[in-house]
Image 1 (cartoon, rainbow, N blue to C red):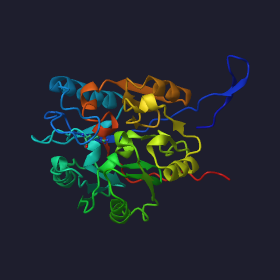
Image 2: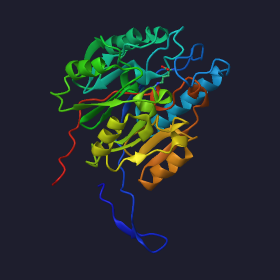
Image 3: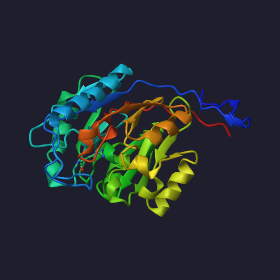
Image 4: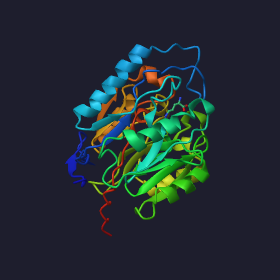
Length: 316
Ligand code: ARG
């Protein structure tokens, strides 16, 4: 399905048409921004002198949820807790692979109570089937672990960020407790070096996990990674979409894709154009208020990955 077909470009030179992209239905966990505010600064985006319009944040969040549902995705909701203004960033609540859910252990004291809140949802509040057939609640991570802020599944690869929040020890713990080897998933450690891109999901977006096309596609900002991790990324994803710094700077890489539709900030206009060239359909959303806490679309979205569909073998 992903095979490109040759067409003539406007200037007469042959060009490759973008492959046809296929969306697959997803299940997401989100947390309404009922208590969202910026009252402490734990990343360079948070500015205590800029007021937050909470009512607008709620409306923008509702629009993101509606966009997911309009595209056929299921959204589960965790109850927000007073005193946890960052709980809206549900991606950080845990990491779920093949229905095995490991709740987060946060770096900063301001967010630490979110770990148990998300664990409680995995444990008792998750509707039957939300985590798939073989759901296992593993409890809270022992190591410093910020969930899908730093763990991104791309088919049979679990990309794992470190440098600011999630520790290397947490990567080792994730391999063991998520039983990645038994699931046929390989963990790849990536080192982040720019404090503005403190979570992996601010510097790298999974556009196609390869489950239908057999071809994994990611987008990333190379300079957000150490030279060694840049080399790792080049080797793993030679055809990756390399983001422009101005798109990354509006958190354009903090995106969620269903394989065809890519949900991302409407501010990342360059990214929208690059996505269209690759056959993706950008779905722009305005999250200007939630941006003030240093997060965007992906931060608000924890993907409840069910048992993995194996990536088709590539022919030699
Ligand atoms: N204020 C939050 C923090 O600094 C933002 C988290 C953004 N989430 C994400 N998945 N990148 O922890």
